[in-house]
Amino acid sequence: MEYTDFKRIIDSLLVKNKETEWIEFKENFHSKEEIGERISALSNSAFLCNMPYGYMVFGINDDTLKVVGTDFYATRKKVGNEELESWLSTRLNPRIDFEIIDDFDYEDKGHVCVFRIPAATNQPVSFLHEEYVRVGSTTRKLRDFPQKEAKIWKGGQMALEKIVVKEKLTATQVLSLLSAETYFDMMRLPLPSDTMGIIDRMLAEKIVMQDEVGYSITELGALLFAKHLSDFDDLRRKMVRVIVYKGKSKLDIVREQSFDAGYAISFSTMVEWINSQLPANEEIGQALRSTVTMYPEIAVREIVANMLVHQDFSEKGFPMVEIYTDRIDVSNPGQPIISVERFIDEYNSRNSSLADLMRRLGICEELGSGLDKAVAAIELFQLPPLRFTVQEARTTVTLFAYRKYADLDRQERIYACYQHACLKYVTNDKMTNLTLRERLGIDKQNYPMASRIIKDTLIAGKIKEEKTENQSRNNKGYVPFWA
Image (cartoon, rainbow, N blue to C red; front, side, top):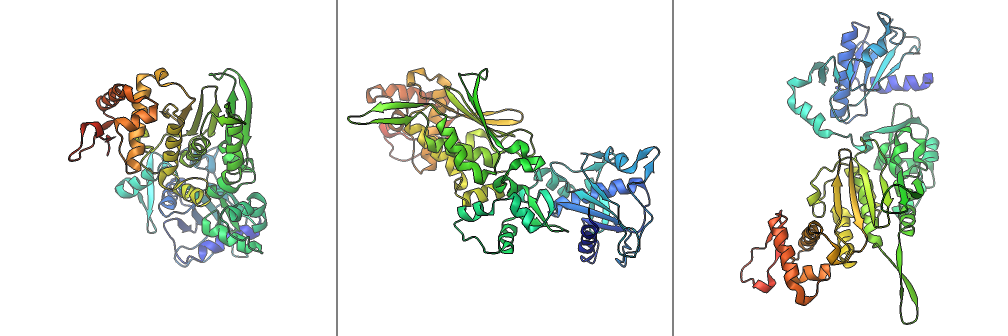
């Protein structure tokens, strides 16, 4: 770090004119245990205050907030034969990557030592098996404040717009890493003529944030607008991988493609490439030949968009599209935060800022209606129902190639009936024997087959009869179990 950057950090903290729940000033070192407790408290409090970092600064009088200097050099301090930094790190859980800035004096006023501590994510940070928090300018045990503790656990993954993936950048460096042109083009906004006009808009969208030195790129900004996700160490494994297999298993890979650019930049190209790898059927009309895709393009698009929006970025692993001869598996890291049975009607994203910006960019639909469109297109093509699979660290949506009604097993027929009932309900309609026959391609004279599927789905508890007055037997309606 340069001295000018170090001085900016100190100046930006001193301008607050007081200690806060995420800033603590101290004149000198007292004990290693005290530092460990403060790291825990400042990390947890930074999360609660929506700050990316907490700070502990040695060499500042906490009453006058004057720089007085300190003889404490944290990087030189030993605990027995072990360095203090290592001793602290092994006693923190989780082992957060705090930084010690210990190289400079502040002007001619003496040495200053800074601990920069990342905000907690996923769980509270503890020291020696005890969790701490700042209440005002006082350090307290977190267990004495159950509401604060619950908020940290409930927060889970930190909001993407609060996570820094590159920092201490100039405006020019930001624009070398992010495609501002993509943002303004997709928003249908004129590109400002000057750099600061572009940066101001990025700040407003939380694509970047100001730090003590210059600018930081947020995870939200990099995920959408990075020219290369591989430029960001933490995001290399978040680029989308598409794998095409020769048959129905993973044994023989035909080709593989990774999309290194941010999602907003690569989405259209990605979906186009995926569709180009899908099998198609050729139909011969009276005069012309035409190619009919095996899968509806809108279904592929909307399910891929959902994969991007709903992934758990705290889980390791790539978002993936795997193409087999009989199906497509679209999967993302993490488990869903709602039941798979409510995917069609309910919308609740762990990445609300990403979902909102992707919606405004025109990539995904609002309030979950994208999956409604996917199901509607699948029904139009009379494909088998979507299959949702939740594993320990991955969620998969499977689109199946066309199969005749007779080739669907009992469970697939039940889920086709349930998904059809959900789609009808969210479009302010109802499922009947007639609509289910149309969805499954069952002839009118075979209505008892549809009746049997409805009965099986009722027994499975997936649907229920609609309660209305003067409803005839032939026009009996059915709604999802949750309606």
